[in-house]
Amino acid sequence: MKLTVKRQSKTNDDFNTLIECDVMNINISSLTNVSAAAAGKAPYYLSAFESGGLVTTTELYMDSQWLRWQVNHKAGSELVLSMFDAEGNSGGVLDTIFTVAGGKSQSCLAPSPAPLSPPTIVPNITDTLGTCQTWGLYVSGGSPPYTISMVVAGSTAITNYTVPQGVGLFSYINTSLPDKRVLGGRPFSDSADCESCPNVVFRSVPPR
Image 1 (cartoon, rainbow, N blue to C red):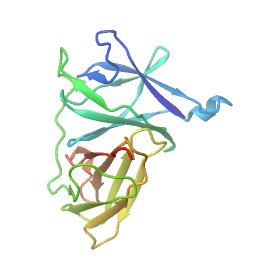
Image 2: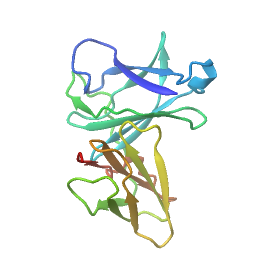
Image 3: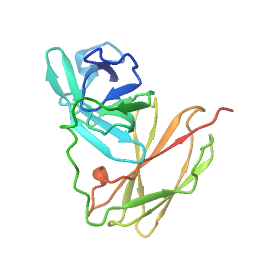
């Protein structure tokens, strides 16, 4: 499967900019063009990873010939978008880093209740992350064991890792290419799902 995003209206010509509460056209296509089944199985879900903010997962709805997604992150957010189908097959991670701009309405921005004891994540590197460099992520709170999602812009899928019980440090060896954005976050545990926790961190990979 392949995920593409297109603006429904022409109110903004900058494709890298999404409008707060605007509706986007989502296209799901086959990478092989062999059959319709190769484009995955409905319903489809879009995950938006916000830098320093929330991770939201939304079921896409059909309107005419397009699937639709409403931009449900506040103005000023930086987002990486990924999609998966009803069977968990990945449609990849878009290479674009989207910035959300203010719109005419904020009616879609419903506050998300935070868990009583949400996990938190703190990186040991706060500027850039080199290729083959180890990135340490310290996780605490919530109820271990933790699961951490690693996302690279432009990759074919999201990779989830489980942090063993009693371990609070996750070490990730960066295998992404230079000039890619790497995201580490969304720690969740049995007692506190962190889709509504501000735990996502972006790091740039410098060129060689």
